[in-house]
Image (cartoon, rainbow, N blue to C red):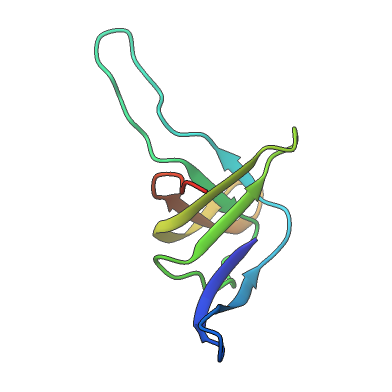
Length: 100
C-alpha cells in the first residue's frame, strides 16, 4: 500500500490518501560481492506506470511470508521493458526502512 499525507484532522492526526494498493514485486537491498561491498536500495516494481507516486510517499509492503516492511519512496522511474511486446512498469527505490 502506498499512501500520501493530505494534511491533518481537527485532532492533529494525519490524513492519508491511498495512492496504490495491489500486487507488486519487492526486491531486497544490500547485495554483496566477494571483493567489495555493493549496496543496493530496496526496490519496488508496480505493474503499471499510470500510478502517480511521489518522493516521500509512505510504503507498507507485505511479503508472501507475511513480513511487513515500512519505508518511504526515494526515487521513482517509469520503465518500458521491450520483450515480445512493450511492458510499462514503475520502478521505485525505497529509503531505509522506517522504525515503528
